[in-house]
Length: 539
Image 1 (cartoon, rainbow, N blue to C red):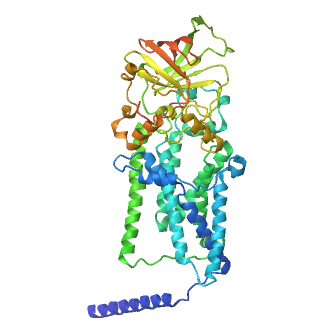
Image 2 (cartoon, rainbow, N blue to C red):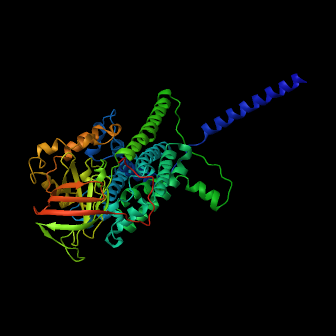
Image 3 (cartoon, one colour):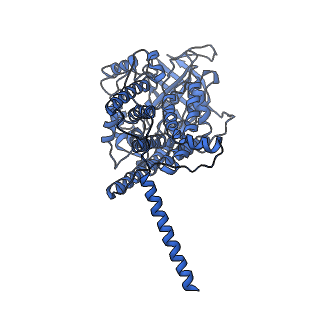
């Protein structure tokens, strides 16, 4: 009996082997699929276009890439590799820039011309572009995956839209721009921001694998489509970059649309078939594995860690260094003198301070009853110095003044500089705005340190004022470069005295060289918003 069973098993194995051989032979003998002429023409244009959209075109990008110190990384080192867009044209007149999409049209024009030239050269010789289509999808998958992971980690560790400072919580709703309202609406719910970051990072991770590409593309399309819409609605400023990922996700989804249509709309039995090139050669197989592992290691593991360090010790949109702890809090201005002349409180007075606040970092804010210039920058970018991190200032009107200070804690003196400078506007890198900033940086302002040498000895070094684990080559170099900025700023020098922080006296010189005497009394202000424990920075 056992012999008969063994014989039957052997026969079944032989039949199975013969079937597999026959199936393999049948596949090999299948005629080569021929694409239609219009399909080939469209693919050629799409190939040139998407490769152009996926390749960095800025010399600054390559400078950053080759200038990275891999032993002392800053999160921005990897973020700047992941975050780029086409940059071909710049118009002096914003209207000609088509809301930022002029670069896309330029790349599309190159793609159409390149596709037509390619078609003329080929003359129908190539029957299909299955292999090239596969590699184009690989390029788009990895470009979109790396980019959205870099974008998503700034939400997973909520630093992109920070929790509002006391100065912002004290601002009247009507004094906020639409953009600022959107930012704060997300910033006050950091756990929602974390959820959005998880979705974006998950979408990017799924794009690294062929079998999960469709799911990753659908997540990417939905998440970034929503962000694009919101940024158009609230003038958020990142509609171009968000729609960049929507475009890539749509391209990846198109590949599976016929199968989905057949399954979901026609309700037919569907077996998905995908084209994969052969990696039979060992060097190709191992090269593919090494590149994939390296990408996952750098952009999922290393970037995760250094982004956490940034969140914990050096959040990029809010100051990183601690302020004088005994000064922190909200204050009423109970006494205010200019040149020894007391100015009583009046809601229409344009000189007297009101509602002063010392933040937990090195910022003093107060209100004056007169219009102040409005900063319309994005409040972030990649500055290393606290004075250039202006999220607490941008999009805020209503007479809000925001000053960065350096403290001589031996002699109890604050050296304050206005965070607002005239070139801190959204178009500062475009057209006349960028040129004006360059002019401002060249020769204007003080040629020597405005803080006395003996006081400077008592002021901590801004670079090393944060936790040592967060120090990086980028921070060190960035602070040194930003210290060369000689743009004129409003400045004040104020002595402070207090016993317990509840009653503070400030006296010194204001930005107009007038003598000033201010008495601040702390107030406990109740907010409808319950403070979140998930806030960036260590103060």
